[in-house]
Image 1 (tube, rainbow, N blue to C red):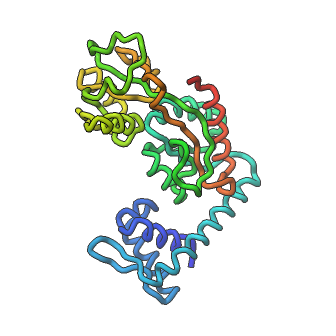
Image 2: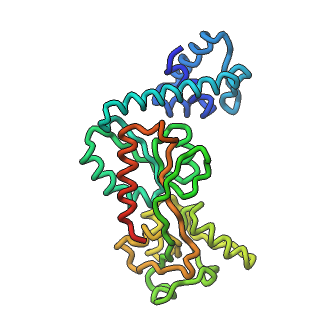
Image 3: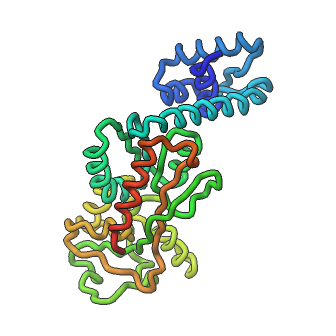
Length: 296
């Protein structure tokens, strides 16, 4: 059996659908199917069966999966050690980050890194903390910039910074001229423009729940630029991280929240020192150095 067969089987065991597993490996479904079938013939046992919901592992598949994962982890670790012999960062690094970090932190880091290490190809993926952590744990991402502390105890984490949230307001809003920080309690009846699952919205839900209410959501989106434009069009307000609040394009400068009760901590996570190639380590160092220049 070879590495491609093991990767085909573990991807199928993870995704439980041929389409998604093939896409994650960047191969066709027939190729994926042939690789798994070849592995089954070598083992003399059926590893997966098709079901209405997708794919189900057989008893043999369940038993073989941890062995396949350990074998691939050993191969990956060996590749890392060999790549370290050259000492010169090269190859590919996949990094994930929260949308605000992709928009407001990574551009100067990536530009400077590319100039220093032109032989390294960077791939950047946006997402939420939970999804990004899972991708790092599965080896689909090398690094991720997520909320601290990480939920997965398997990941190594380095705290980078702590930032408060601010209130973004439409022009002509009743609070737009405020010279003082705003209390969350005064926002209970405001319509919100939100990206679901953010720290600011979770805190607002707590404040509203204390008086038996729920926040009024005028719009949900997964796009930062949409948030800013919808607020400026007068659709509602939003609690945004200071990184986003510093954007000079706001027509009304976002206002601090009293008491500093809404904040997030950001960290960089990876699977462990043994999985860091020279390129991945160099990128982590570049991110860490840039984070020290951010003033909150």
